[in-house]
Image (cartoon, rainbow, N blue to C red; front, side, top):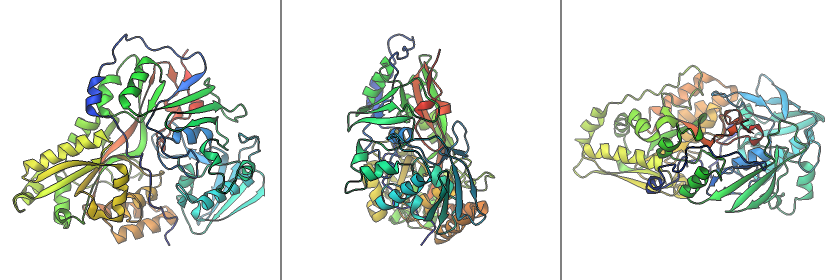
Length: 530
């Protein structure tokens, strides 16, 4: 059994950087009306538009998508988090004020924050740490792997929790800091509302967290409502209520934003909207660091890419600079490493794929006339679609009968069960790991059991190096694993993507409310300009 294995993912929403038809964008390409900024609310209500429903109940032990993290991360808190407003991975305190780790990476001791209460009034103590970890292991939903490696949780006193792991794991703090990591839940509330499903029914419409806001209304497909928790231990914003209305159509969401009915849109607009909002004096436009990328993978189960020569030649034909400049624009930069930007501090995971289209052009001439290939993309991602169109056009110039084809997200995640049902290649417009450890990237994308290795292109030595590295945190092993996998010709990191947040001119604190691990904002840190 592998160290803290990651399981197959169902995070279908994570791939959606952009979900709006290009024709619809053309219809609303002008902000129209006055250039005067919309006024700030006077009723204490912040309105953040959601593009599509959150898809799953906002239960922190079930939820494993992106669109609803705004609810989870503002109603619940973990022991640690990633530090806000920095562009590198740094573990910061949350409900734990400090911690120690033994040399073997098997015992993690946390000193807990005093004076914290859950929304039901229960005092936060070390017993809640044990109860919260136990519930995640029992429910086995969402990112259950993050607590599956726990052997025991000792509670020597109310403000000390000692977590002992079954095996060494240097990534455990990253598990806890992950936006999908275990959150603290009221043990009293869990017991009171347990029902027959460990409180899963209750947590569809309520919360049992310690966060700055409480979930006070959940109308699936329509709107979610958060109300400020009076007993919150941390800072409070002037927003006593946060409305999260659901928009099924992106053009309607943009119109609501333009008119001032929506205060902010987080990570939901396509790059084709950049010209409308970026540099517009009427709005704020923030490009914030993430761990996410656009990725290109190929399918070795298909005849076209059955041999390494074809795969490496194809990768050399990909013009990263063209794709980033023409499609992604200011929200992205060309990726030069195999992991996320800065994940390996010394850059030893450098992506050594040189752009040389003549290699593939020469290879194409050796193929039978009429050789066909399909480049896939998620059908709800217009950025990926645009990149796929560019790639197929270049392939056609080399005499390949190439086509770009969209696939629903549910079908994309199903390819790992049978890669032969997938396309020859796939462009993922935006994807990333659950957290900042290289293991959480490498295992997910490169190990055939990771869940987002759609075509099961596997290198056993890569897997072995990752599993050895996670025990100690050995950077050189992580770099070796990356280079070994890159040599298969199955994978390219196309771009480093940023979280693009557009907001009304009066909204302050956007960067301070954001961290590299999540495409969402901490609403308690937002304010109104004076």
